[in-house]
Length: 91
Image (cartoon, rainbow, N blue to C red; front, side, top):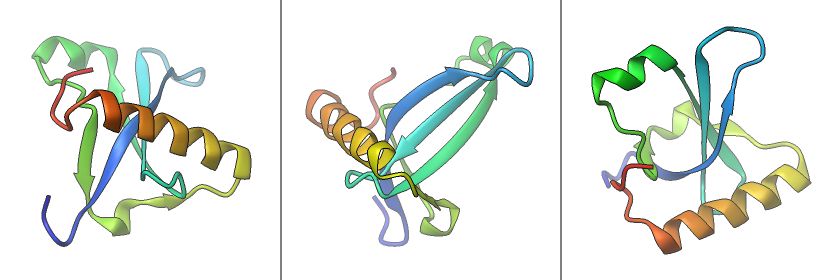
């Protein structure tokens, strides 16, 4: 991991209700306080780009998790992912 990045772990994968064929991936910091959202079209999953257990992202691209229950949920899921997967594991 580079010094100017922060590691985030996959904590949520949902299908968008607003747009067809869109999957929303949410990655969060281990403390659950920051998140990174990534959107992918279902058709892009056929081009062999893996969804990995973790990403290293620029801190400027992270949003704050305002809801305390959501922070706790993200922290618990990030911890579970970090304990059971290597960062580059395909999920």
